[in-house]
Image 1 (cartoon, rainbow, N blue to C red):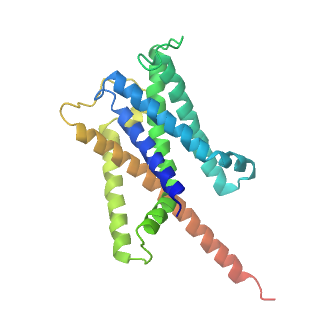
Image 2 (image 1 turned 45 degrees about the vertical axis):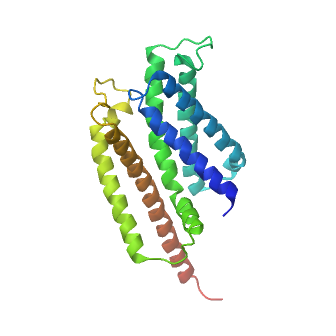
Length: 234
């Protein structure tokens, strides 16, 4: 495992962490929120520089690759919307730009942010096997362990269950359709609770993506084995 890959992984998780922090707008002041957003977009730019060759593979993609392309392009769309509206409504970092974003731009900004959260979670889940292989390689874990696998799956189930509850607690459904509500998180009462709930929502969608992909892969392996077994010997 190369040091470059580990660096890329660290930068990607840092960008995801900045997205998470940026959602806590009412915990931060506007300056901190804009600086966090600026840092996140710089890391996203670096991510795309590292992965620039991926775009050349789009015309050659097959069925499995098309799912990855759809998720990635959806994330790109959400991030572009987030960036454009950020520039339009900036009151500090980019206030010098001759842009004027009003209430609609703020609505789109919030909508894009929460869709980005969901799509990033799915994006993470689709690459979870690669991440876990990197962790195993880093710590020299070469043997399989049933106990470890059971513990990890039980943890994933618990996080996903809490993620379902958190989705209702935080009104994620309303946020994903830009439905205006007066429900705002009370950061004075519980700041940690906000981040735990958002992390559990990330875990929910990442788990759904990861295990759905594994199920599809396992089914294809069984189908391939069945086809190979049914072929007559030459």
